[in-house]
Length: 200
Image 1 (tube, rainbow, N blue to C red):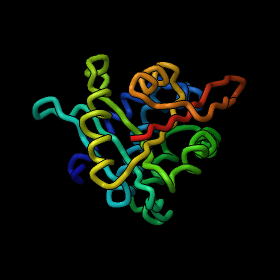
Image 2 (cartoon, helix red, strand yellow):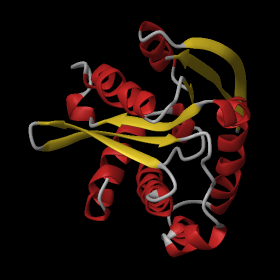
Image 3 (tube, rainbow, N blue to C red):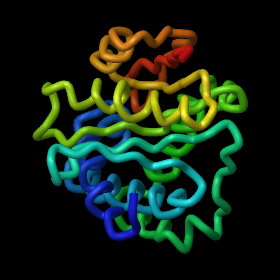
């Protein structure tokens, strides 16, 4: 992912994640949710552009998907790096209690994978432009982009977590094995969280 592609990649991710319980639970107001998604994803991509591995999938010349991968030696960027990447902008997007409680939920949901991260590559996010979903672009991203890339870099295991039952079926069809499940509650609503691993 080149610097001048960050905005396009963040827009694809924001639109792809918009209907997920992972965000609707905390940001029920649609405008606030979209503003928050744009701000947090853009800052995440900017802060991690050199620390993580960003791979893209194109349909011809059109960018239709992006994945953020963490190698086993990944080191999270410093708070200063996030601030320089515009992280503070999230505080102008939505209600402060939701903004402050979302990162803890995110950390808790990802904990099983983060504990495995020293032995596995971690798919931090994988998104396909909503206009291209249901056309096997996600499967192609895994099979033709992610797995070959990880193998080329000496990796033999991939892990990830999802909070979407539809995504569970998607990853299971691609040979990922469920190794942890839990539920997360916020404001009286509950969602599932499933962690998967795949040996390459």
